[in-house]
Image 1 (spheres, rainbow, N blue to C red):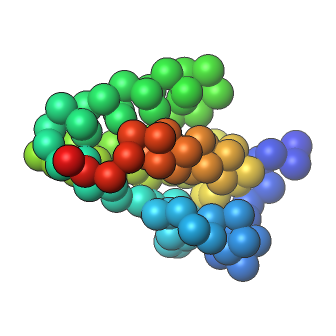
Image 2 (image 1 turned 90 degrees about the horizontal axis):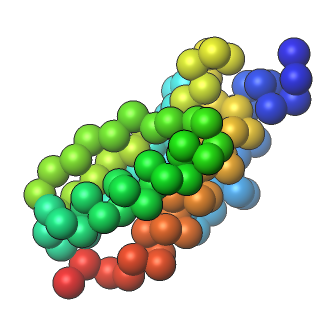
Length: 102
C-alpha cells in the first residue's frame, strides 16, 4: 500500500494539526469555521473546492449561515491519511487568509 494511504492515528497528526481548527476524530479530521455570514461561508467553500479539485481529494461539507464545517477522510483507505492532513492544512490556510468574521 502506498505511503499516502497509510492510516494515521491522532498521535501521528497532532503536531501537524496544532494551531489549526482541525481535530482528529475516529476515522476522520473535523473542523468548523465561523465566517460571519452565508456569503463568507460560500466564498471559503469555493476556495476549498478549487484546491480539492487540484488535489483530487474532496471533503464532506456542512454549510450554514455564518459557518462551514469540513470532514476529511480517505474512504479508499478507511480513515485518515497524509492526503487528509495535507488538505486540512490547505483549508486552514484559506480560512486564515479569509480573516476573522466581519
